[in-house]
Image 1 (cartoon, helix red, strand yellow):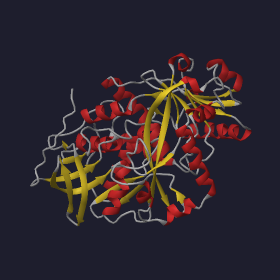
Image 2 (cartoon, rainbow, N blue to C red):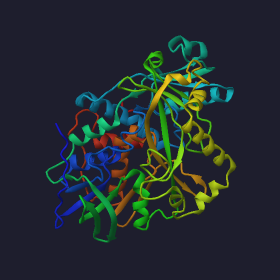
Image 3 (cartoon, rainbow, N blue to C red):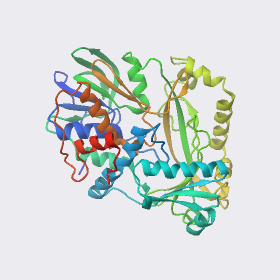
Image 4 (cartoon, one colour):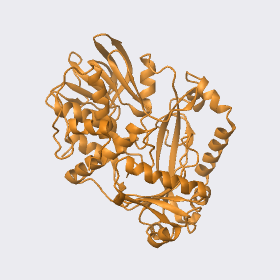
Length: 455
């Protein structure tokens, strides 16, 4: 089957709901609303296909929420825990990749080992069973992954490597109703909002078009804050974009390691991920990422977007949160270090060699994928969680980052439930989905509240 997209939109038609963004979160919102109600919904995607950007440009790892503090990241942790079984059912039904390879997060210090102990407590609180994970000694790690050397590790046995782009398209294929529509090549220029709804001005295939909707749901990922700012919302937030780059490992060496190998994060207040080794569902092995500061959400090469430069991006209002970081020596030092690992694959190999000592620069054959994360900042620094901001007739989902793809189906239920409680969707009766099994709105909503396991 082929996902049906259209570039033909009738200007005279008014839609009940317009969803902006055809990524994994937009797909999840589209699924719940169109599968369970006969609302007229239009999804607006600026590319010629869905899931082109972050939803496909990621590690492909479905994370169990072992590393998420349930007291500080409750919604994120529950979304990830509940969505695991949802993705599993969809992957098997659609033939999407599902490689249950597991993740080993290694410790290289006494402080790291303390973090692993916290992971054990968090895992149980986040709904994992004791069979899903274990704490390993360094010797035990070497027993199952001889190339890995460490003091100890947390082993999340049921982490999965998949392709979120394929899952996103499969979700779209199983969603929709007779009144729903998915556009393509539709770039949003501006949105005028009033008490009755919104007028969305778009360029569709070079032609300016107005789309009228009673409610707008902004799930535009890296462009979400720009859209919110244009409508007068989220004025206290700025965004910085960081490109994560990976290097591909030659099969002769990559084949010696079968699991994902991560290291305990050291700079948790910044969006700088410590390097890891990824076992992709298609058999490729990669190491990375870095976090290169760039000028836009789709700058996959260089530092500036095609229609501007990084300086203009940094000067976008509000400026104060960015200035606070510019004068932060630790942050500036980290930015410089990340650039170094972008220019020299030897630097990336050196970083990974801390826990995979046998990896050599010559084992990195070529650049792998690169993806861009937009990280929200305010006057206090980087914002750690997603933000949902409600307008008159609009809802804006901002800063929805890793493990966002993992938790998207359940997080979308959380958003829809909030909208219902605030009166944005009226008296809707959700319950059954076109996808069988665990895809039940009311049950997922109850799990998000109770924190019980979805398994």
